[in-house]
Length: 214
Ligand code: AMP
Image (tube, protein in one colour):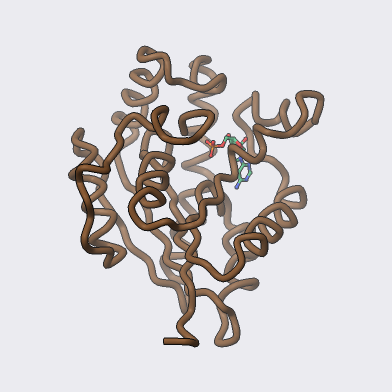
């Protein structure tokens, strides 16, 4: 077991797929390291041009991201890692495969597509705003629509790329049910994670140790 590879668990899905909530619950259950790309970017100074790109609901340029991701993964050390929010386009997906899929890589990549219909995505964002847990980029309907368009145009092809990439473990998980526990157990089942303590589950991620919802 000494030489067993660690996992990078890649969570992909549109808005309202529950990436952040699933990630934070996986962390609470199993103590994985967690890289939340959106949160790292939101932590940049307000005057950063990246903030303006995000406010429009567009993707930040790949060149800005690769170093951020590489450093974040390196800083995790020898650990199982959840990567939330990356890759988001085909270039990023190719970079991930080039960097981390090889016999010599210390990681196996497990990519999950948290799948749900667009109609449900829109409903969930609206609920998030109504419940007061929404983010700045959830409030403006044009920005929500832009993020949906980006998901369809850029991220779905990246998901398709990973699905067909050699050396990747790929799973599709239907997260359209309204019950979070049902979805979380589906995520765990796909990843082969057992012994879930359902008493520990937290649906309201604001209660977890994090500064925002995702
Ligand atoms: P998220 O919190 O994951 O929804 O990300 C919020 C925003 O951060 C996105 O709408 C993008 O503007 C930016 N962002 C997050 N991840 C990426 C990525 N992998 N590539 C480019 N931009 C990203």
